[in-house]
Image: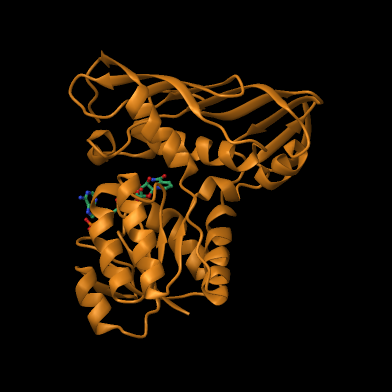
Length: 303
Ligand code: NAP
């Protein structure tokens, strides 16, 4: 199946391109980006031009930041093409509801991806937790903004989500593996004095789960989730790729390279079955953190 990739920036080049090159399902037939290009692939600066010129391209994968993504997403669906969305699926929940309705009206697939749910140990953790009770949990998601998002000013602007851009990955795993629905009880947001979005956040969630997200981490990076259950402890480390049960290794490996191939395989499966996958539960937790969060202004941040 032919697919166009839009928003040729960091994640498109780091993950989408290698996953598409290795995919037996997808043929990368065009790109849409104002500056980005992929050698040997026809490039369009505007999505409308690509949709008009290449009617045989049946699916579009959008890697733009969340704020500019909505206009492009609407254009794709209105043109009757299947749509795959990078996380988070939109800048607001209401936008994504509009996209869901548009996809339904046009009879096409919409897939809101959560790449961390494809991490190697997530499915095993979900199976293990299925018939256990989580008594408490601690999520620590601390990474260096300058290392992973060099120069990406949009991430700390309104709608960029700030530290929730990586933090929503942890919440996408949490909402996938927990047998019960989880909700936010309180939040603290640290916002740099010269920016609009939080650079750090601490969340109190139901089931005695606490989350600590920080974009100012230097040295070792941490993407850990630890749970105490009625049957002992379970931990997911390396962003959901490594599993520990009772403090001992129980599967997975420290690599994220399987996540995007799994997303494209799932997209192919959804298209073939005429199905969609649009779970907004991680984004609801983030939206609620912005609704309930106590804000503190902290030191200005510059790249
Ligand atoms: P990025 O490199 O800053 O942006 C991707 C591309 O979007 C840019 O190169 C730019 O290409 C295009 N774009 C269009 N309108 C834009 C605007 N108003 N502001 C900035 N760029 C605009 O971002 P990214 O890191 O690839 O992230 C894109 C999405 O993927 C985000 O939703 C992010 O959460 C998600 N994601 C990122 C990572 C990661 O590690 N970076 C990991 C997983 C998911 P042109 O200038 O050529 O149009």
